[in-house]
View 1 (cartoon, helix red, strand yellow):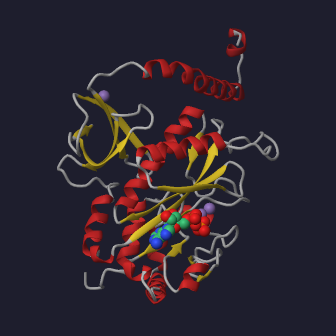
View 2: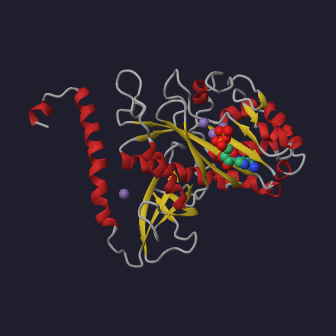
View 3: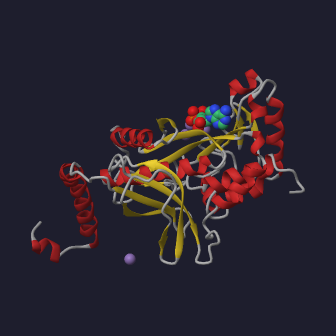
Length: 357
Ligand code: ADP
Ligand code: MN
Ligand code: MN
Ligand code: MN
Ligand code: MN
Protein backbone atom coordinates (compact mmCIF):
# COMPACT_ATOMS: atom_id res chain seq x y z
CA UNK A 1 0.00 0.00 0.00
CA UNK A 2 1.18 3.48 -0.84
CA UNK A 3 1.84 5.78 2.06
CA UNK A 4 -0.38 8.41 0.43
CA UNK A 5 -3.32 6.00 0.54
CA UNK A 6 -2.79 5.52 4.26
CA UNK A 7 -2.68 9.26 4.93
CA UNK A 8 -5.87 9.97 3.09
CA UNK A 9 -7.66 7.00 4.56
CA UNK A 10 -11.23 6.78 5.82
CA UNK A 11 -12.48 4.59 8.70
CA UNK A 12 -13.66 2.09 6.08
CA UNK A 13 -10.15 1.94 4.73
CA UNK A 14 -8.81 1.17 8.17
CA UNK A 15 -11.25 -1.70 8.51
CA UNK A 16 -9.91 -2.98 5.25
CA UNK A 17 -6.27 -2.58 6.34
CA UNK A 18 -6.87 -4.54 9.49
CA UNK A 19 -8.56 -7.33 7.57
CA UNK A 20 -5.65 -7.44 5.16
CA UNK A 21 -3.02 -7.45 7.86
CA UNK A 22 -4.70 -10.18 9.88
CA UNK A 23 -5.23 -12.44 6.91
CA UNK A 24 -1.67 -11.78 5.75
CA UNK A 25 -0.17 -12.54 9.12
CA UNK A 26 -2.18 -15.73 9.43
CA UNK A 27 -0.61 -16.86 6.16
CA UNK A 28 2.92 -15.73 6.90
CA UNK A 29 3.22 -17.26 10.33
CA UNK A 30 2.35 -20.78 9.20
CA UNK A 31 5.52 -21.41 7.29
CA UNK A 32 7.77 -19.49 9.65
CA UNK A 33 6.41 -21.01 12.81
CA UNK A 34 7.36 -24.53 11.77
CA UNK A 35 11.04 -23.60 11.67
CA UNK A 36 11.00 -22.44 15.27
CA UNK A 37 8.83 -25.25 16.51
CA UNK A 38 11.34 -27.81 15.29
CA UNK A 39 14.11 -26.36 17.48
CA UNK A 40 15.04 -28.79 20.28
CA UNK A 41 13.97 -27.69 23.76
CA UNK A 42 15.94 -30.23 25.85
CA UNK A 43 14.20 -31.51 28.94
CA UNK A 44 12.50 -28.18 29.50
CA UNK A 45 8.75 -27.91 29.29
CA UNK A 46 6.48 -25.05 28.31
CA UNK A 47 3.39 -24.94 30.49
CA UNK A 48 0.50 -22.69 29.49
CA UNK A 49 -1.80 -21.77 32.36
CA UNK A 50 -5.36 -21.04 31.23
CA UNK A 51 -8.06 -19.37 33.29
CA UNK A 52 -11.48 -17.70 33.04
CA UNK A 53 -11.13 -13.93 33.29
CA UNK A 54 -13.30 -11.34 35.10
CA UNK A 55 -15.94 -11.36 32.36
CA UNK A 56 -16.71 -15.02 33.09
CA UNK A 57 -16.76 -15.58 29.32
CA UNK A 58 -13.25 -15.05 28.04
CA UNK A 59 -10.16 -17.14 28.65
CA UNK A 60 -6.69 -15.81 29.31
CA UNK A 61 -3.37 -17.58 29.38
CA UNK A 62 0.28 -17.23 30.27
CA UNK A 63 3.19 -19.55 29.64
CA UNK A 64 6.06 -20.53 31.93
CA UNK A 65 9.16 -22.69 31.51
CA UNK A 66 9.50 -25.67 33.84
CA UNK A 67 12.81 -27.54 34.15
CA UNK A 68 11.12 -30.88 33.49
CA UNK A 69 7.83 -32.21 32.26
CA UNK A 70 5.32 -31.97 35.14
CA UNK A 71 4.01 -35.34 36.33
CA UNK A 72 0.86 -33.97 37.92
CA UNK A 73 -0.90 -30.78 38.94
CA UNK A 74 2.07 -28.90 40.33
CA UNK A 75 3.35 -25.33 40.07
CA UNK A 76 0.83 -22.79 41.31
CA UNK A 77 1.00 -19.49 39.40
CA UNK A 78 -0.25 -15.99 39.99
CA UNK A 79 -1.56 -13.16 37.87
CA UNK A 80 -1.86 -9.62 39.24
CA UNK A 81 -2.86 -10.39 42.82
CA UNK A 82 -4.84 -13.50 41.92
CA UNK A 83 -3.71 -17.11 42.41
CA UNK A 84 -3.96 -19.60 39.58
CA UNK A 85 -4.51 -23.12 40.89
CA UNK A 86 -3.90 -25.90 38.34
CA UNK A 87 -6.89 -28.26 38.19
CA UNK A 88 -6.50 -30.28 34.99
CA UNK A 89 -3.57 -31.10 32.76
CA UNK A 90 -3.79 -31.47 28.97
CA UNK A 91 -1.31 -32.04 26.14
CA UNK A 92 -0.51 -28.93 24.12
CA UNK A 93 -1.56 -29.49 20.48
CA UNK A 94 0.13 -26.27 19.31
CA UNK A 95 3.68 -26.76 20.59
CA UNK A 96 3.31 -30.55 21.00
CA UNK A 97 4.72 -33.00 23.61
CA UNK A 98 6.01 -32.64 26.25
CA UNK A 99 4.42 -29.19 26.54
CA UNK A 100 1.24 -28.79 28.51
CA UNK A 101 -1.94 -26.79 28.79
CA UNK A 102 -3.12 -26.44 32.37
CA UNK A 103 -6.63 -25.36 33.23
CA UNK A 104 -6.64 -23.27 36.41
CA UNK A 105 -9.10 -22.09 39.01
CA UNK A 106 -8.72 -18.47 40.09
CA UNK A 107 -8.49 -17.52 43.77
CA UNK A 108 -8.40 -13.90 44.95
CA UNK A 109 -5.68 -12.43 47.17
CA UNK A 110 -7.29 -13.90 50.30
CA UNK A 111 -7.40 -17.28 48.57
CA UNK A 112 -11.19 -17.31 48.16
CA UNK A 113 -12.66 -18.37 44.79
CA UNK A 114 -12.85 -15.33 42.45
CA UNK A 115 -16.35 -14.20 41.50
CA UNK A 116 -16.15 -15.84 38.09
CA UNK A 117 -14.73 -19.07 39.52
CA UNK A 118 -17.89 -21.19 39.53
CA UNK A 119 -15.97 -24.45 39.56
CA UNK A 120 -15.45 -24.59 43.30
CA UNK A 121 -19.17 -24.45 44.00
CA UNK A 122 -19.80 -26.98 41.25
CA UNK A 123 -17.42 -29.48 42.86
CA UNK A 124 -19.12 -29.14 46.24
CA UNK A 125 -22.51 -29.97 44.74
CA UNK A 126 -21.09 -32.86 42.69
CA UNK A 127 -19.54 -34.29 45.83
CA UNK A 128 -22.98 -34.61 47.46
CA UNK A 129 -24.43 -36.69 44.62
CA UNK A 130 -21.40 -38.75 43.63
CA UNK A 131 -23.27 -42.05 43.99
CA UNK A 132 -25.59 -41.03 41.10
CA UNK A 133 -22.65 -41.15 38.66
CA UNK A 134 -23.98 -38.22 36.66
CA UNK A 135 -22.85 -37.90 33.04
CA UNK A 136 -23.09 -34.82 30.87
CA UNK A 137 -22.58 -34.22 27.18
CA UNK A 138 -22.62 -30.69 25.76
CA UNK A 139 -23.16 -29.52 22.19
CA UNK A 140 -21.17 -26.34 21.67
CA UNK A 141 -22.45 -24.18 18.81
CA UNK A 142 -20.43 -21.21 17.54
CA UNK A 143 -20.28 -18.75 14.69
CA UNK A 144 -17.13 -18.01 12.75
CA UNK A 145 -16.63 -14.31 12.13
CA UNK A 146 -14.16 -12.59 9.85
CA UNK A 147 -12.09 -9.82 11.40
CA UNK A 148 -14.75 -7.43 10.13
CA UNK A 149 -17.02 -9.14 12.70
CA UNK A 150 -19.36 -10.35 9.99
CA UNK A 151 -20.06 -14.09 9.71
CA UNK A 152 -17.04 -15.63 8.03
CA UNK A 153 -17.32 -16.07 4.25
CA UNK A 154 -20.39 -13.84 3.93
CA UNK A 155 -19.95 -11.10 1.34
CA UNK A 156 -20.63 -7.54 2.50
CA UNK A 157 -23.93 -7.60 0.67
CA UNK A 158 -26.15 -10.63 0.33
CA UNK A 159 -25.70 -14.30 1.16
CA UNK A 160 -22.57 -16.38 1.38
CA UNK A 161 -21.15 -18.58 -1.29
CA UNK A 162 -21.41 -22.27 -0.32
CA UNK A 163 -17.78 -22.54 0.73
CA UNK A 164 -16.84 -24.60 3.73
CA UNK A 165 -15.17 -23.73 6.95
CA UNK A 166 -13.89 -27.29 6.99
CA UNK A 167 -10.22 -26.52 7.58
CA UNK A 168 -11.03 -24.80 10.82
CA UNK A 169 -13.46 -27.48 11.95
CA UNK A 170 -11.04 -30.32 11.16
CA UNK A 171 -8.08 -28.58 12.77
CA UNK A 172 -10.01 -27.97 15.96
CA UNK A 173 -11.21 -31.58 15.97
CA UNK A 174 -7.67 -32.93 15.69
CA UNK A 175 -6.40 -30.51 18.30
CA UNK A 176 -9.11 -31.73 20.70
CA UNK A 177 -8.22 -35.39 20.12
CA UNK A 178 -4.50 -34.76 20.68
CA UNK A 179 -5.17 -32.74 23.80
CA UNK A 180 -7.36 -35.35 25.44
CA UNK A 181 -10.72 -33.63 25.03
CA UNK A 182 -13.58 -36.13 24.81
CA UNK A 183 -14.86 -34.65 21.56
CA UNK A 184 -17.64 -36.85 20.21
CA UNK A 185 -18.23 -35.27 16.83
CA UNK A 186 -18.94 -32.14 14.83
CA UNK A 187 -21.59 -30.93 12.44
CA UNK A 188 -22.32 -27.85 10.38
CA UNK A 189 -25.40 -25.81 11.27
CA UNK A 190 -28.21 -24.30 9.22
CA UNK A 191 -26.62 -20.87 9.15
CA UNK A 192 -23.50 -20.76 6.99
CA UNK A 193 -20.33 -20.28 9.07
CA UNK A 194 -22.04 -21.72 12.12
CA UNK A 195 -20.79 -25.01 13.54
CA UNK A 196 -21.19 -27.38 16.45
CA UNK A 197 -19.00 -29.87 18.26
CA UNK A 198 -19.98 -32.27 21.01
CA UNK A 199 -18.00 -32.96 24.17
CA UNK A 200 -18.76 -35.87 26.45
CA UNK A 201 -20.04 -37.89 28.09
CA UNK A 202 -18.05 -36.56 31.04
CA UNK A 203 -18.70 -37.32 34.68
CA UNK A 204 -19.33 -34.44 37.08
CA UNK A 205 -17.00 -31.44 37.08
CA UNK A 206 -14.97 -32.84 34.21
CA UNK A 207 -17.70 -31.57 31.88
CA UNK A 208 -16.91 -27.95 32.67
CA UNK A 209 -13.16 -28.53 32.51
CA UNK A 210 -13.35 -30.23 29.13
CA UNK A 211 -15.72 -27.73 27.56
CA UNK A 212 -13.70 -24.71 28.68
CA UNK A 213 -10.52 -26.29 27.32
CA UNK A 214 -12.24 -27.10 24.01
CA UNK A 215 -13.26 -23.44 23.77
CA UNK A 216 -9.65 -22.38 24.35
CA UNK A 217 -8.56 -24.64 21.50
CA UNK A 218 -11.26 -23.20 19.24
CA UNK A 219 -10.11 -19.63 19.94
CA UNK A 220 -6.51 -20.57 19.34
CA UNK A 221 -7.17 -22.49 16.11
CA UNK A 222 -9.28 -19.62 14.79
CA UNK A 223 -6.50 -17.19 15.55
CA UNK A 224 -4.19 -19.26 13.36
CA UNK A 225 -6.71 -19.02 10.53
CA UNK A 226 -7.31 -15.30 11.00
CA UNK A 227 -10.97 -15.65 12.02
CA UNK A 228 -12.86 -15.25 15.29
CA UNK A 229 -15.12 -17.83 16.96
CA UNK A 230 -18.08 -16.07 18.49
CA UNK A 231 -20.22 -17.67 21.19
CA UNK A 232 -22.83 -14.93 20.93
CA UNK A 233 -26.18 -16.75 21.21
CA UNK A 234 -27.74 -14.69 18.41
CA UNK A 235 -25.38 -13.22 15.82
CA UNK A 236 -27.98 -12.50 13.15
CA UNK A 237 -31.57 -11.71 13.87
CA UNK A 238 -33.37 -13.84 11.32
CA UNK A 239 -31.16 -16.90 11.53
CA UNK A 240 -30.72 -19.72 14.02
CA UNK A 241 -28.97 -18.66 17.20
CA UNK A 242 -26.17 -20.55 18.94
CA UNK A 243 -26.86 -22.74 21.93
CA UNK A 244 -25.06 -25.22 24.11
CA UNK A 245 -27.54 -28.08 24.63
CA UNK A 246 -26.75 -30.21 27.63
CA UNK A 247 -27.47 -33.94 27.76
CA UNK A 248 -27.81 -35.50 31.19
CA UNK A 249 -28.06 -38.98 32.67
CA UNK A 250 -27.64 -40.61 36.05
CA UNK A 251 -26.85 -44.26 36.73
CA UNK A 252 -30.53 -45.01 37.38
CA UNK A 253 -31.62 -43.24 34.17
CA UNK A 254 -29.21 -45.40 32.18
CA UNK A 255 -30.44 -48.63 33.75
CA UNK A 256 -33.53 -50.59 32.77
CA UNK A 257 -36.72 -48.61 33.29
CA UNK A 258 -34.69 -45.41 33.66
CA UNK A 259 -37.32 -43.37 31.81
CA UNK A 260 -39.24 -42.98 35.08
CA UNK A 261 -36.21 -41.17 36.56
CA UNK A 262 -35.82 -39.06 33.42
CA UNK A 263 -39.46 -37.94 33.61
CA UNK A 264 -39.12 -37.13 37.31
CA UNK A 265 -36.08 -34.93 36.56
CA UNK A 266 -37.95 -33.13 33.76
CA UNK A 267 -40.82 -32.31 36.14
CA UNK A 268 -38.36 -30.85 38.65
CA UNK A 269 -36.87 -28.70 35.89
CA UNK A 270 -40.36 -27.51 34.94
CA UNK A 271 -40.86 -26.11 38.45
CA UNK A 272 -37.59 -24.17 38.37
CA UNK A 273 -37.73 -22.77 34.82
CA UNK A 274 -36.94 -19.14 35.68
CA UNK A 275 -34.09 -20.07 38.03
CA UNK A 276 -32.50 -22.05 35.24
CA UNK A 277 -33.01 -19.38 32.59
CA UNK A 278 -31.25 -16.87 34.84
CA UNK A 279 -28.05 -18.97 34.92
CA UNK A 280 -28.12 -20.41 31.40
CA UNK A 281 -26.24 -17.40 30.01
CA UNK A 282 -23.76 -15.04 31.70
CA UNK A 283 -26.21 -12.10 31.69
CA UNK A 284 -29.09 -13.25 33.83
CA UNK A 285 -31.13 -14.52 30.88
CA UNK A 286 -30.70 -11.41 28.73
CA UNK A 287 -28.67 -13.21 26.06
CA UNK A 288 -31.19 -16.02 25.81
CA UNK A 289 -33.99 -13.47 25.47
CA UNK A 290 -32.67 -12.84 21.94
CA UNK A 291 -32.26 -16.54 21.19
CA UNK A 292 -35.16 -18.44 22.79
CA UNK A 293 -37.88 -16.93 20.66
CA UNK A 294 -39.90 -20.04 19.89
CA UNK A 295 -38.58 -19.97 16.33
CA UNK A 296 -35.55 -21.68 14.77
CA UNK A 297 -35.74 -24.90 16.82
CA UNK A 298 -36.02 -23.13 20.15
CA UNK A 299 -38.75 -22.97 22.76
CA UNK A 300 -40.01 -19.63 24.09
CA UNK A 301 -38.00 -18.33 27.03
CA UNK A 302 -41.25 -17.49 28.82
CA UNK A 303 -42.54 -20.99 29.40
CA UNK A 304 -41.17 -24.45 30.03
CA UNK A 305 -42.05 -27.23 27.60
CA UNK A 306 -40.91 -30.80 27.15
CA UNK A 307 -41.52 -33.60 24.70
CA UNK A 308 -40.27 -36.75 23.07
CA UNK A 309 -38.24 -35.99 19.93
CA UNK A 310 -39.39 -32.38 20.07
CA UNK A 311 -36.69 -29.92 19.00
CA UNK A 312 -39.01 -27.03 19.72
CA UNK A 313 -39.16 -27.90 23.44
CA UNK A 314 -37.12 -26.58 26.37
CA UNK A 315 -36.27 -30.16 27.30
CA UNK A 316 -36.30 -33.01 24.82
CA UNK A 317 -36.37 -36.74 25.45
CA UNK A 318 -34.68 -38.18 22.37
CA UNK A 319 -36.84 -40.70 20.53
CA UNK A 320 -34.70 -43.77 21.19
CA UNK A 321 -34.69 -43.02 24.94
CA UNK A 322 -38.48 -43.24 24.90
CA UNK A 323 -38.27 -46.44 22.87
CA UNK A 324 -35.72 -48.13 25.10
CA UNK A 325 -37.28 -46.70 28.27
CA UNK A 326 -33.88 -45.47 29.45
CA UNK A 327 -30.93 -43.24 28.61
CA UNK A 328 -30.62 -39.45 28.92
CA UNK A 329 -32.53 -36.21 28.41
CA UNK A 330 -31.51 -32.98 26.69
CA UNK A 331 -31.93 -29.49 28.12
CA UNK A 332 -31.88 -27.21 25.06
CA UNK A 333 -31.96 -23.90 26.93
CA UNK A 334 -28.29 -23.10 27.74
CA UNK A 335 -26.84 -20.40 25.48
CA UNK A 336 -23.60 -20.90 23.55
CA UNK A 337 -21.76 -18.59 25.96
CA UNK A 338 -23.01 -20.28 29.15
CA UNK A 339 -20.65 -21.31 31.91
CA UNK A 340 -20.81 -25.14 31.98
CA UNK A 341 -19.91 -25.19 35.68
CA UNK A 342 -22.99 -23.09 36.47
CA UNK A 343 -25.27 -25.06 34.16
CA UNK A 344 -24.24 -28.51 35.42
CA UNK A 345 -24.44 -27.28 39.01
CA UNK A 346 -27.98 -25.90 38.53
CA UNK A 347 -29.19 -29.16 36.96
CA UNK A 348 -27.83 -31.23 39.83
CA UNK A 349 -29.30 -28.91 42.46
CA UNK A 350 -32.74 -29.06 40.86
CA UNK A 351 -32.85 -32.72 39.89
CA UNK A 352 -30.77 -34.52 42.49
CA UNK A 353 -29.94 -32.61 45.68
CA UNK A 354 -32.67 -33.12 48.31
CA UNK A 355 -34.53 -29.92 49.31
CA UNK A 356 -33.12 -29.64 52.83
CA UNK A 357 -29.50 -29.33 51.60
P1 ADP B 1 -28.55 -33.81 18.98
O1 ADP B 1 -29.44 -34.85 18.37
O2 ADP B 1 -29.23 -33.11 20.11
O3 ADP B 1 -27.98 -32.88 17.97
P2 ADP B 1 -25.78 -34.67 19.43
O4 ADP B 1 -25.43 -35.93 18.72
O5 ADP B 1 -25.31 -33.40 18.84
O6 ADP B 1 -27.38 -34.66 19.67
O7 ADP B 1 -25.22 -34.73 20.91
C1 ADP B 1 -25.51 -35.77 21.78
C2 ADP B 1 -24.79 -35.53 23.10
O8 ADP B 1 -25.27 -36.44 24.07
C3 ADP B 1 -23.29 -35.68 23.07
O9 ADP B 1 -22.69 -34.55 23.68
C4 ADP B 1 -23.01 -36.91 23.92
O10 ADP B 1 -21.81 -36.81 24.64
C5 ADP B 1 -24.19 -36.88 24.87
N1 ADP B 1 -24.53 -38.18 25.48
C6 ADP B 1 -24.59 -39.39 24.89
N2 ADP B 1 -24.93 -40.34 25.77
C7 ADP B 1 -25.12 -39.71 26.97
C8 ADP B 1 -25.49 -40.14 28.28
N3 ADP B 1 -25.77 -41.42 28.56
N4 ADP B 1 -25.57 -39.20 29.25
C9 ADP B 1 -25.33 -37.92 28.99
N5 ADP B 1 -24.97 -37.46 27.78
C10 ADP B 1 -24.87 -38.33 26.78
MN1 MN C 1 3.38 -7.99 33.49
MN1 MN D 1 -26.29 -31.64 18.19
MN1 MN E 1 -26.94 -27.86 16.75
MN1 MN F 1 -29.05 -31.04 20.69
